[in-house]
Length: 255
Image (cartoon, rainbow, N blue to C red; front, side):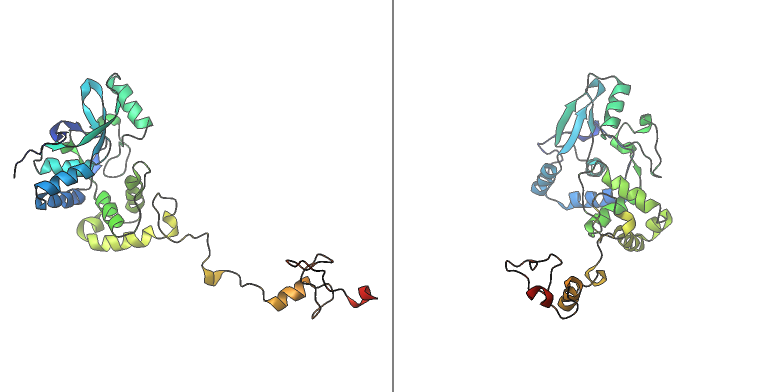
């Protein structure tokens, strides 16, 4: 199998716009690439066309698919398919990063979920560091705990949510146990503000907790002006609610 596929641009020249990936998730993508034949690899590349912008000095900065491109780099792949969202090569370095930051095209947060200076974003894919909670979120999505969302960096939002409720030691040493706990947390009401939440709404009460409908007899008693047992399903005089004929009158009205 040839090492160079006739598609895309050189991976080694791509620059990231975030600081972390989940190494466990990268390994999963690496294994999938290793097991694929040439045709399957080309299909993978076409399914993962990488969005990017052109920055200062004509360099290509990717704004998504960091796990996939990092996996390809580690597997010594050469090219990847890229499409350009904007040419910002006319901007100075500080202006460029300010533009990305204000358009949610970069994410300067470290493996502990702490905001870092934009200058701390690595200059190559090989400089990305591990955030195990990113891997946990990827597995959570596959397990149906939450859905993918178009919200920028929604995986980071989920990672930060889980980071505050699950210890890193548990994720590192007992990933399966951490995933079970993450599934419980993801379906709870505390996560309902997160994009892709697929739990049961705490606002809508389950059917067995909703107030029971009034019986017909109770409705008659509540709407009757003549007391129990009399007709008069509506409080409006002269008409039955939902009927087109006159309401039956009381004995005093008949005289």
